[in-house]
Image (cartoon, rainbow, N blue to C red; front, side):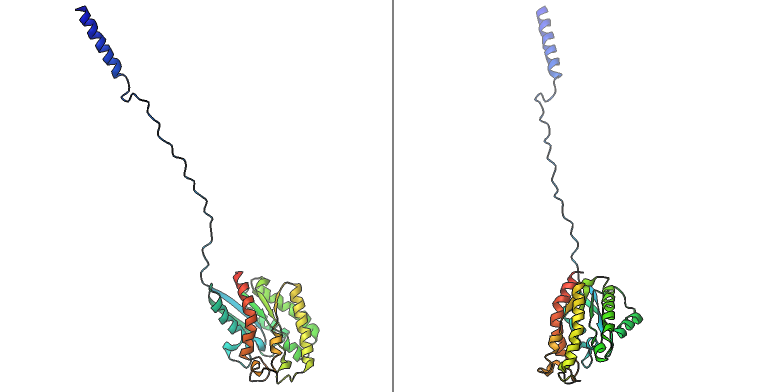
Length: 253
């Protein structure tokens, strides 16, 4: 009887000790820790520039206003049209012209002062000086006033000289009116040389179109019906030289 009691006590003790162990007697595997996901830094880029409106100011005299040709035949209008054709980023171009036949540098300075155009133009062209020569005004007036006009053009181009183009003076000696007068050509060479040297010294873009107009006697199609001013064909040839320069400047915007 004692033996049975002892055996029963042993069984109970054994069962109790077994029940005290964890339900899962095997060591649990810790959960896997996933490595952090590397997020590559994305370079921020500006949104693509959509079509925009740009502003162009043309300063000058009869060669800018287009004396004796239609309004859309003058070189600023042709340049405007060709920019819109060739520059996809531009959807609209607003052209302002301050020019009148017969204006000298003094006249143009006064007109700009009176009209007081804004200073937010994306492109400014300047073609002036032939009437200083034609009216026999002292050359030192041009020497003094041309730089003022260039600086005004820069101011109107948001203060950025990279958006200014100075155009050389056409040579009206090579027209029926000028009759090949070499004195006219020599005078205009003096004006153009001064303008070019000034522009080169100050890193201002200068485009020569004078040689085009010097074909006027051998090619009458380059002269308007008045026998003095450039024709639409001549202005189109001006723009062939101006266009690539203008487009590069507008791409800087």
